[in-house]
Length: 133
Image (tube, rainbow, N blue to C red; front, side):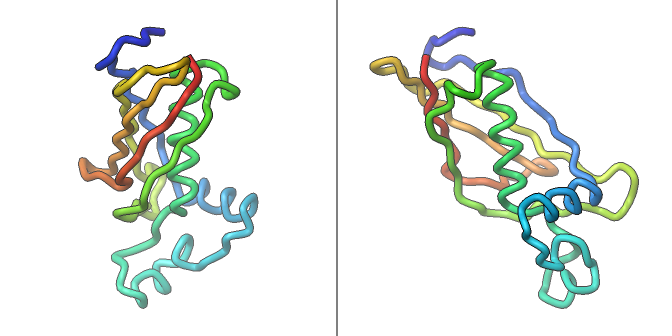
């Protein structure tokens, strides 16, 4: 692991299928129908079912732990939800891509600027993490 400023972490791509949303709803208790019903999603102005924002953020956490190899090293991470992740009702689903760049290292802490995209567009803004290094 390189702690040099500007280090680019290996991009991570995560598939999201409707079945993942069902499992996440069960685990989180978030049964909002926009996460499983096209009819409801369309009725509120969405083009279809969207992934839970917190599920998308959890995938960012997965990328971080992949990069630093020890979940205990992740001190904080967060983001603003800026665009929904649409999940089609098919066997392929969709993907979310997570990239990271090391922006600073101070006093044993590293700040990683994160970019999270879906279909080439950012879905999280002001996304960053602080890890122990």
